[in-house]
Length: 283
Image (cartoon, helix red, strand yellow):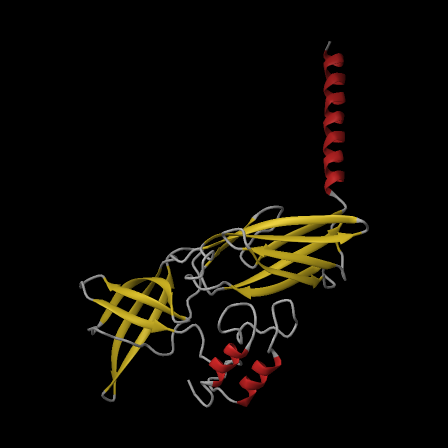
């Protein structure tokens, strides 16, 4: 009786192992995995949370039985929260089997920015089309804390800013080089909380003090306007880079997201004019 039971158990175990092996074999072959710099590895996985104007890096990894496949064109389609395609880009896989490109999330006031975005990557190879989909969230209500300290240096008022994250998935805030539009005064150190929203192509925050009901407004800039190479001065090198990118879209290797100051995924005369307006400015 025991031998019969043992034989039946071994047969069932063998059948299970065979079926498992069949599933594994079905999963082998060409596999495409699309993800962002914040996650999304695995089929149909989430790519994390982003804020308006944040840069999204997209990757698509093409493998065959686990080995990278190079020199294959991968089609990316990026749909906003209204499921409207806003970017269709084709990039080749490198020696590691990875195709990639990046873009900047539009400002929050653009319809379709806030919510769930969908990225679909597909490639055709050996008569077979492989596809993967990932999603990521755009959340304009990511909360960070900011501590503003008032200091005095040789009779000059100096504002120091210390920024820290509250949520683990919160975006990294660029510490401003200048603070504008101060309509109230701080004495000592105050801790305030902020919620970002967009205004006039700059990132603006309303700061609410914990200890007092006054409201202050501070205008923060994500980058120095016109300073394409980030060397704190707008000169001919910046204009040269802007000119080299003229007419480019993310599909082109000439595309430079720091020149695309209007965030419309096309570099045109409006972008060039906005950069030229700041020529000679230092930061």
